[in-house]
Length: 112
Length: 111
Image (cartoon, rainbow over all chains, first blue to last red; front, side):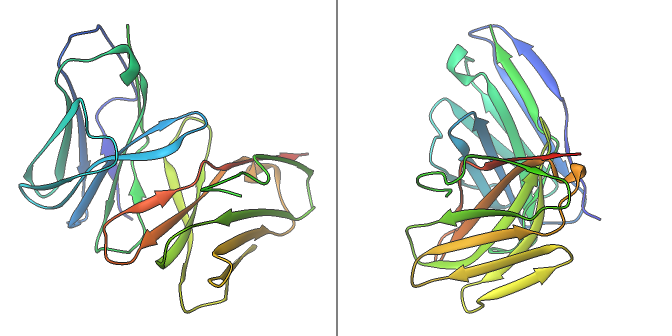
């Protein structure tokens, strides 16, 4: 079965720090996604990538950037962390457009 | 319902009962998917129904889709304590890469 691995389950950072969230999938999927999940707001798409070095902004890209240098790895970068970026971050991948998503276990990020 | 007003946002039932949750959406879709999330974890895909399908079954799950009403329902039959989780629908909009998630229904199954 597909495995999507996020590097950390819990992360605590200070405001202004640069934060890297890593995601690796092991099934050669074309598409990878970063979502954040907040109570009452559901999942909101930050960025997605449909190929190596290709990326598209989602609904809430401000304050974030991404990197996809290799097909299996998709990194989310918080350039200067702020308290309003405290959230659960979920990485997902899919083989093709429209198909089911495979999610990682999530990273609960707290920015103090 | 999800992706709009929740109905219900939360649901509490006894083991063995059926659970029904609803999802509404606003745009033309390619397919609609249901996911489960156990507390504090990632989402797990349950079932996908295409826009030209009206009903689909998978084990104890039954999903219906009414494209004229832009709504879907997920029925879990003979629920178990292990079904306690949040359930999300996601619509895949035609012509985009976007999966739009609802805000979820929290299901609690009491033993």
